[in-house]
Length: 255
Image 1 (cartoon, rainbow, N blue to C red):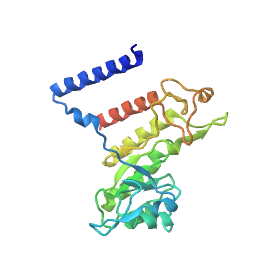
Image 2 (image 1 turned 90 degrees about the horizontal axis):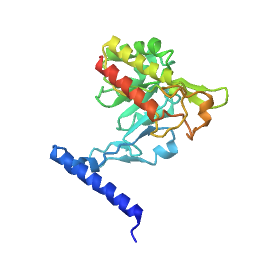
Image 3 (image 1 turned 30 degrees about the vertical axis):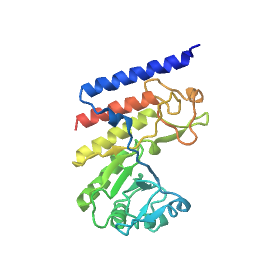
């Protein structure tokens, strides 16, 4: 007897093999499609985790946090006299700092001096999470101050964490229109300041979840219960993520 499932997978494998050979004929290196370069990034929040994962590089005799390639300090833990900025000022990883709407120009300048006193390209990334109503008001003064200081950080927008809401039926959510508007505001500010938008930090999934309201599918507050599956923060589903990707492409094209 022949297992139908085996014939199905043999057919799929044959299709993949033919596709690979076709791409090779077109000059595509199919080996690159079989390998993955994987980088790890997270908020450096818990010292019980980060300290034991810190190592001294034998070649340079300098400390690195080996829990990730890129770690960041959160909006709630970026106090100038706090333990988080002090700890991460002593390691050599590329570092990020979340900047919310209460960030002052003076605080930002002191953060730069603490984390990047030598103005090292690639050392520092600022991740703005202002919220859609505040980004056009609060971000320009920070971008201008950094530009004039001689520092060269990468600027990233996080349009998710500044736009959280709690719906009347008790769900933690985000309005997709707010996420889109903060991305637009991020690009507009950098265009006006003559600086460069460097990236976007999004929470998303390829699944058809219903965790953020709005978007092309018009997910309502009542729809959230349909497939609300996150264990922590609400994510964009695959359709919303594609809509956002098209917006970013348009904004990059228009720069």
